[in-house]
Image 1 (cartoon, rainbow, N blue to C red):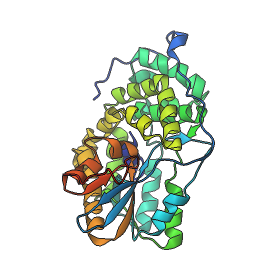
Image 2 (cartoon, helix red, strand yellow; image 1 turned 90 degrees about the horizontal axis):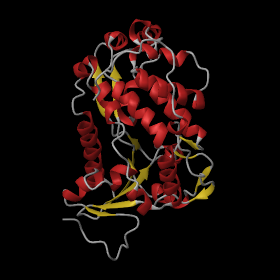
Image 3 (cartoon, rainbow, N blue to C red; image 1 turned 135 degrees about the horizontal axis):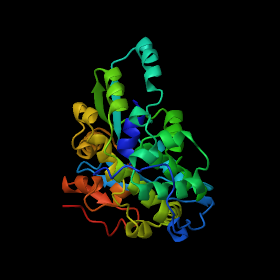
Image 4 (cartoon, rainbow, N blue to C red; image 1 turned 90 degrees about the vertical axis):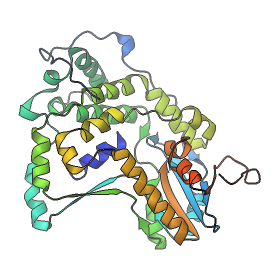
Length: 346
């Protein structure tokens, strides 16, 4: 649970539809099954350049915009980026959520049996019983194509089932979710560069009660399930094009294909649940944003050079994280802007 909740909140307004009357599949028009991704690039690729954030004192925050998923057979030409990392005094990790549980070693062991079946629907309900018939028909067609005969996923909550389908679809399309972050983490470790989390941290006083509440509560996650089906049916090609654009360093294409808020229904499905409200997860996006920005401002004041990781969508977004730093008076230069033409942000 300590891993599942942060992943869902950071990588992903629902009104439940009528329950399916049975597990029987409804007919699905062949044209509604999916659009294949473009041919994925392979071999050595440069990736995008680095954003440069400059403080009034001349300190620099170098920002790499990350993307998930990326072409599976791409080899990142990381030499220049690793050189910049090696000259930095600190590496700021990607924004996210961390749950801190007040458990010792034996407390953790005692909790493990409670995590069994945490993905499953309450009361042993099957997916066909909790999602609308039309959605279940789409699910069956897509599941047959990407997952195959996996009986256990039919017992999962719609949110988890949809995410499993998404992972299988991008794998089939020649993409994966490993990304380039592990390369940078290893390089920082090898060079002794401090790796600073930027997570918004939540302390869980009673993890056992949290798990119990989660397992018995029905999430309002039908909209999340539908958004994941839509993404697999219609967005695999777009995700592939974005992955290729990141690999080749085509920022203009990435701007034109800027990420949409596809994950909002899934984040809201979790953040709006009763157990999540007890944790104080209201405005979780805002809290995550402020945690990263606070670390960025601190690092810019303390270090001559800092390296940071940030979603490329947030780096490109007009109202994103880097735009917030620009509004604070820092100079922000994009990788594809000539340094001689770059002017300080007001």
